[in-house]
Image (cartoon, rainbow, N blue to C red; front, top):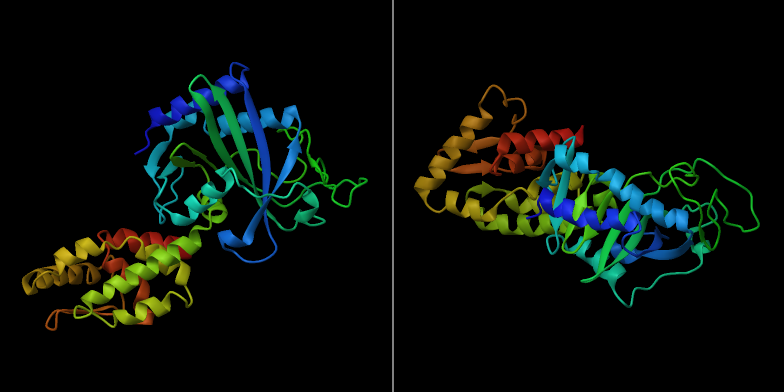
Length: 337
């Protein structure tokens, strides 16, 4: 678990580095790809930076996760179906394989990167984001922060002697990247950062995109869909669910499946009596006038003790078998909207 106290303590190091009380260094990497959307298809290129740019990275981190924001915002564990306002989310290491893969890659002594920014394309069209490694020297050893920020649509171009010269970027590096000199589309805040054993998330969209979590969601959802087949005497037709992950709405379905607890279902379906009680409670939900329209077409057969699955009712079906059926359906619909 990550607390607000943990965040405040670790950011005090950044504040001291910014104020010159601790030495720090910055490596600025662009994340880019020629094709593909998996972590293996993405590559990195290092940019040289000037002092103004390096210090600006610390300022952006402290601006995004300011003391007032940390104090006033909610701090919740990362939830794939939630994206609440005025909320920071945290995710601990070893919870998402694709997230760990990116961190393992960029923090490795064998990290492989290009040192010529021409690999990014003439207009940086291959760039998907920027990752800034901050190393702060302390009496107890070096502390590392990895800052992730999205690259936006370019808003300024300037002709220069290199084929790639966009604002304050050339084939070698980045210069004078501060809040008052932001020419090539990097945001003035941080989407999320990694430190020690956890991520702290400001922008959920950046977090999912730069760490390839859609692939992770689908992989875990497939495992859950397979495990659900052990309940096929109750969940009639559930064998089709895994195939439907590849169809229309597969990403949303994957997100919703991540809320299904196999262990909870084992308890709910452990005996005919428990099955009857569970299905009766679920039937009350789908016949509730507040949710009748949402669960239209979903059938709970109390006599046969079955819930009938089909592609047409897949979202309602998955929502119903989670611990928080109405909330899951609402949040899933919110994503679709």
